[in-house]
Length: 283
Ligand SMILES: C[C@@](CO)(OP(=O)(O)O)[C@H](O)COP(=O)(O)OP(=O)(O)OC[C@H]1O[C@@H](n2ccc(N)nc2=O)[C@H](O)[C@@H]1O
Ligand SMILES: Nc1ncnc2c1ncn2[C@@H]1O[C@H](COP(=O)(O)OP(=O)(O)O)[C@@H](O)[C@H]1O
Image (cartoon, rainbow, N blue to C red):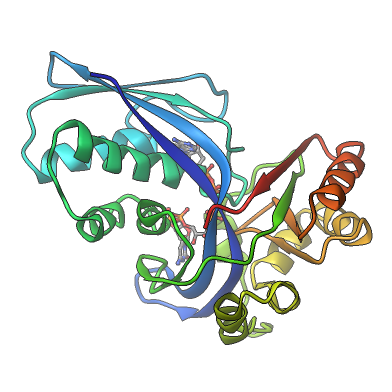
């Protein structure tokens, strides 16, 4: 039996940093939601006890460094499973973009192996296992709209955003999450209003949501890559109601309510930026 799992990308509606921790990570508070831009994961059972990964990407390794491989390895070790699997990954989510593609692939493997090997492990337990792979994996295991706390692994679900369109524009650069966190300076920070975003979600208030989007890593990434600011300006000028960088970047997204407007912004940005997408929120 071959099993399929969808691995959707996420965007940050907010990203706040509350402090630096002794373990080198940052204490964060961030609201994320899932969007309709997904990698496709196929899980093929193998007769031998081993993990194979195959994918076509210049930017992603197909060995034990792949987060999908790590997910299968940790799943097998944790539950003493002496079976093998071939993981085929079809990547659609841009890599090192701030959209959590690798984390989502890992989360999809955890969900998929749970089904493939009929383990019936509760989602909470899978999410806790995912935290050993990366800070964003627990969110991706749940695949919803949520606030993530701690280093990102403590998840509390929130209502999904009001129905809207998302235009994504990724400049032709990859950003290292680690580098951006390292360059972040706690002394010059304007915290986003997390509570206002939560109430906007509860009220399904699109304008309030757009007015309160905020990401403290945005200025760090823009300082390193000024073209991110140019894309942000274009996205705003074209008429997006809310504009923000997702995660550590460099992808900028814009939110709009109506499809016609979304298509106009998408077409306008395509002349300016190589990788542009138009998607809906799944959250
Ligand atoms: C910034 C965010 C926001 O969603 O996403 P991306 O930009 O990667 O999409 C995440 O926190 C990224 O999570 P993830 O990509 O899983 O990061 P990890 O592998 O756990 O950590 C990579 C590196 O980032 C730094 N890091 C990460 C999370 C955190 N709370 N504090 C940190 O300082 C650490 O230096 C760590 O070594
Ligand atoms: N399955 C995977 N998909 C994408 N990137 C992966 C994967 N496995 C490992 N990586 C590595 O993880 C790093 C971050 O990739 P990605 O998850 O796309 O970034 P981001 O979280 O910023 O969106 C890259 O260096 C990439 O090579």
